[in-house]
Length: 208
Length: 288
Image 1 (cartoon, each protein chain N blue to C red):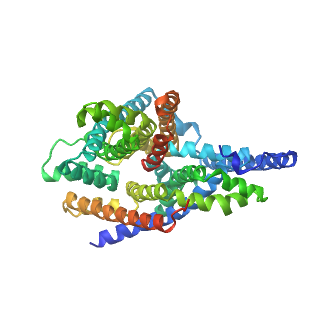
Image 2 (image 1 turned 45 degrees about the vertical axis):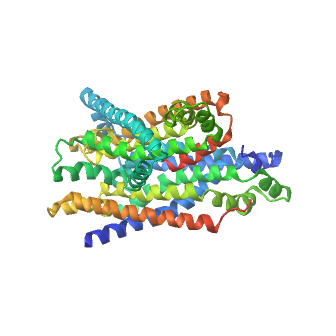
Image 3 (image 1 turned 180 degrees about the vertical axis):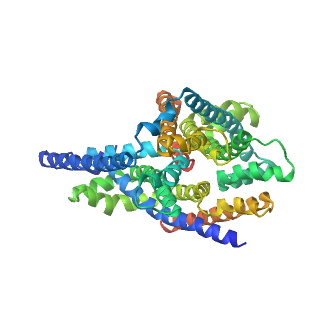
């Protein structure tokens, strides 16, 4: 039982910090991809295209196994996993936001420009607040995917929920039962996120 | 399409953008240079670390691993398309005893992490007396169950995005429910959903990399194996690079096919309605 508690605590830690970091980074990258500066657009596009086409396993593989060889200040596995997950998820968030920006009626941005707001003001004061509301369902899908992706970190010796199996089988307990419990808890967690999504959807419904 | 967010730059802004551009390029180059210098300093580019990849045997193993990845991908892709179609049709069924189980099946397998699913199949099933689970079956079965469920949602969304008149017209000319589905709704829905389906295929390809955790002998598994060969200086970073190039290459090829198909389909007048593409976009985001 202890195992489950520490495992899922680590899962939630991974999820929570990666989600925040990915949201921030994703918003920045999403903004870069619609910015008037060609260089920023190119950088954003390159980043999104490369990382989205790399398996998450490979990203974590690099951070968990490759990074310690680079002679940089050592980081523990949890931090490495958070960095990897954030970098990976941020690309999806950026793409989601970009599609959300496209759903904001043209008149909004035009009106903002007409009263003399700069690009940064247009985006942060007018467009993004509305875009965020319209992308809540897909944004939560990204977060649910992130929650499930935290299990991949188990393959790289982060002691979270996915690693419970290894521990159980070391003690000679049936692996199947443990795994089914892990699956069940994940279903509950995902259901919780879905409820949260419905709550935000209702709260921030766009009146159009 | 997003140019509405800013005015066309005037001469002043152009120089400013140029300056920012130069600065951004320098920063990006700086980061890249830092990474490369770190890599060089820690000796990742020394010939000794790359030497292992010059042996024909190693190259052939990597090629075989790529084939293993591709075969898992191909099998899982075909199977999950079939499972997806069956589940989508099942969910839309008028009979409660068909649609309710299908609904729960989809919800269940979408909520369980793919890795856990693979582990249940690979480590769990043999303990209850099901024999003959190879890593390949575990990977393919896990991918099929998960992506089949996701694809089922995509198909269903595609069918529901079609105008109601299509179904009614089919009924009106006397087709049965199965006929309407097979001859009218499904062909249109699958065309509308093609972008989603193909991007889901990219996901399947990427997720085969999870197979390395259940010891399936694919690219990443080999990369780890070669990366830990001590007599060649544990070239884990070079191995990761090789694997990355293979994956990104394969995914870009698939993405290229997706773009090509999308382009060809966008000429088709049947898909003129924006509804299907909008739904496609939504499902697309969900389906990663």
